[in-house]
Image 1 (cartoon, rainbow, N blue to C red):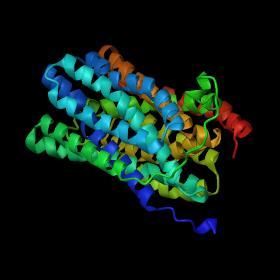
Image 2: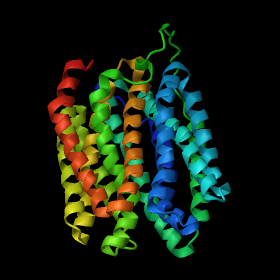
Image 3: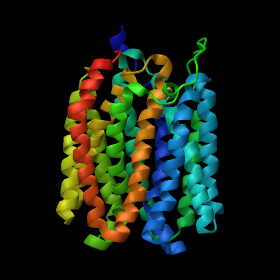
Length: 393
């Protein structure tokens, strides 16, 4: 009976659509923000790094609390509130008329966006049938991958023909509004469990058993933070690629989506460690050829490899950390892995800008190769053993 439970139920489809809209709105503006700050406010590279890292820092601060809130209160109400706040913050970019105001808006946006992704990730787990949960979590990321792929391409196409950053901000605002409407229509399962009284402790905000996975995700998040934020400028200055960013993200997303479908069967059979191991090795090769072989072939080839690698790594690690937590701590587990990713992302944005300013972009991307190799070593020497000792299911 369980084997025939429906994976693509109505609520799961809506949660996927919400996730797509969140990702699309976010990545519609993210790849062009360094260029926007440079063109509009004549910002230096290190200033761009400081301004853009503010978002990640506040998302990091908000996510542990959002996980606790989503585990404690009615998840549908929590999700709707967080997504409404995210919608409002997209509108704040339209009102930011100076570098300071933009920096404030971007920084404040980190809290609702980070909280909304934690709540929506947890809602996806809630609406999935238990027998299809591992597979469903793996496929859930496709909605994010599609948003990540399509949005930069759409943004670059629109900007190429209109040269209007403001139009992009309006479009992101509109898509964020659609995510609010969709979230409001989800029929969330009723789970009014009596909450046990527990003292407030670190473990209520950060899944301590998942520290090894969190450290790995931090390292890989750092690499992606550098890549996603400095790809356009690097391609333009180093390789003379002025319109290839959209193609790069499309190829990366194609790799992500392909690997999600390829890995779905092994995830369904519980082969989490194998999925992650293969993924992180493929990604390491992608970052290495991107950095050490500066050419158009390596530039676009690395996108496919990094996409394939991350598409195997991420759902495997998300399932691993969820398996370390009891059902009542799902949101905390999700917030732990997403907080770690954001922390790595923020450090990558900040440090990447500083290194680029003083040592150049080759040195900046060389740090991603080193970080990824360290992450691979940590996984094989510690993370997989720690998971096998502590997994609850």
